[in-house]
Image (cartoon, rainbow, N blue to C red; front, top):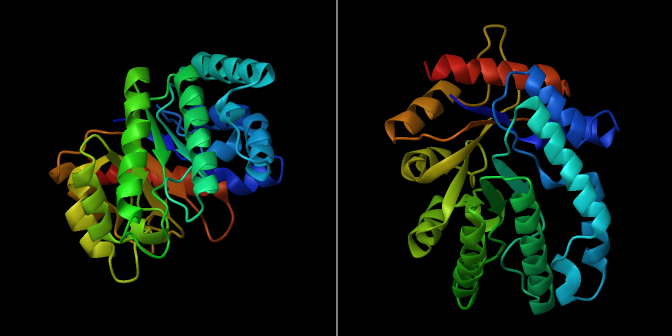
Length: 277
């Protein structure tokens, strides 16, 4: 089985300067992962320019990588290769498809193109782009979301990359919306998060969306001494995925309430392995 840790699991270590993308790679190796599934903020050199581009007027040049960024990515790839860990899904925040502002939509699309180039250089298999649309998917919103994903998927296909949507925020946390989108864009895959559902919709989300999953974020927050997760039945979630034919990487996204990120990641991996035996 393939195991990964979404690097958001280490966002506190990142924030404290105790981990970067290079240390993340080494930590994943130490923890027994077989794939790397980083969050875009872990690529600090890239992320810094993303933040600058976010404040500037839209430019068609925004999707291009600088020479310094190219060199940085070469070093990242070399480090991953030395560790024997290929890249799976890169989770990209801030490139969501729909925004009320046309200018912002253009910026986000340029960022999505930019991260497709990054994913290609790292030989990543998947990239997660959010849908957007906080208030409604009615009117012209849903057609724009469908158009946006279709455009990005066409580009990604040429690079050998699969595009995923996640039940992450906004109306994507409603199972019926996810299914509507996945049915409208057949080549769009699902990064299935065990926890991120609208209030009262988790069971519905598990039951109705498991069959679409191409990748996972298995959320954990707190553990009993027995090793069981205290907020969700992770074993049931894993078994449901297996029953629906899931063949992808088992992805950890631990966000421990006690702040001990390394221990939580290790405990989550152990729980997943026990659950899928």
